[in-house]
Image 1 (cartoon, rainbow, N blue to C red):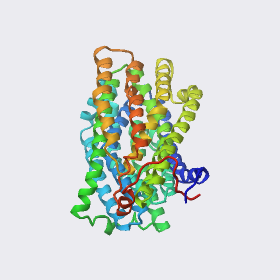
Image 2 (image 1 turned 30 degrees about the horizontal axis):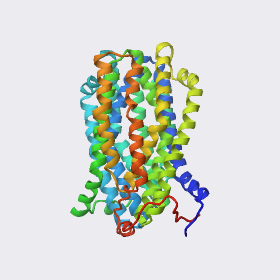
Image 3 (image 1 turned 90 degrees about the vertical axis):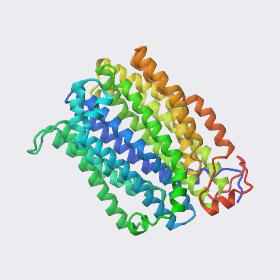
Image 4 (image 1 turned 135 degrees about the vertical axis):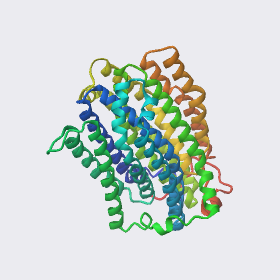
Length: 470
């Protein structure tokens, strides 16, 4: 049915069903990280800085497997739209196998070679020693983290967004309680300090995964627990999967390595800057948490329509999702600036570290609206089958523009920390213009299902045409 007015009420409801649980889940995780930081900050700024640098190694791991998450969600959402059960099961099994190989690799690096890892991130020996203690333990939780991410991606794309939320609620509560016990030595347990924080993280991940599995079984979810059907791949399917995932994997790995280089540069700033950066990364997770809700909504709401053979609906949803995301991020940024003083003080910031942390927040908020618009567009392109365009742009700008600016300003010219930090976002406005042109061209709609491929023949983008039921 063709409508002259867009069905905003129905559209916003569909976004809320997906975005709100995901945003709440990420908000819970960020809240847990903030509580972690507050507890660890009472031990001292070196401890905060060390754990923050360990988190950067975890981020590198995320970059290693996130390409498979993006590729997996492309297949999950499109096969879900086409009601192809075998496609969903096979793509989940392949996604899980690829992701788990990354999680195990990083777990081995963290538990067996923590000194090497910490030496990459900082030249300060006392911070490295603290980080080694943390990594030796937290590395055991990396495969659990990967497993949790894979399950969440599948559940969200198949309409079960509340189950990952439940797992996060239980996991965060468990983590906070165990932190209180293990870091400070309550209830007769010896005070383990940063080792206690690491152990609490591992145990909380195990509890969260268990809750998700039990909840999925109780709800009768027919994909997550269909283990025998997960690994029945054909050569043709694996080739098609890897062909779609490869650009995303290249993007995430190369961007992850680029971010590692940036963190290495920032890790050689003064100790106050390292502590401020650790706190900023935790707060950044709050913004990304809200963004992830829209990102998942884009992947599911657009990818499902592409897979079902409704490209005009997918197109009309895509650009609206981008602008809605930017609007919400702008409101969140204003709120963050307004409340920065109590937040930073609660997280142990004072003096120079407070000033630096606020400067990082201000810079991030200024660029955040554009940055999240770029991310949402890229995730939308990927879910619709175009894993190349945004990938090429991000890689080129990271390696040709951002890294040279950061490395020269930080290591050669020795500019102030905030100037070096600001260069991390210098490419965002340029990429936004290029991404917008691609968005409205409609060339990113590239289905993997027969239904979607058939519907795409002869299709042309038209912003005035909407075929969507209220």
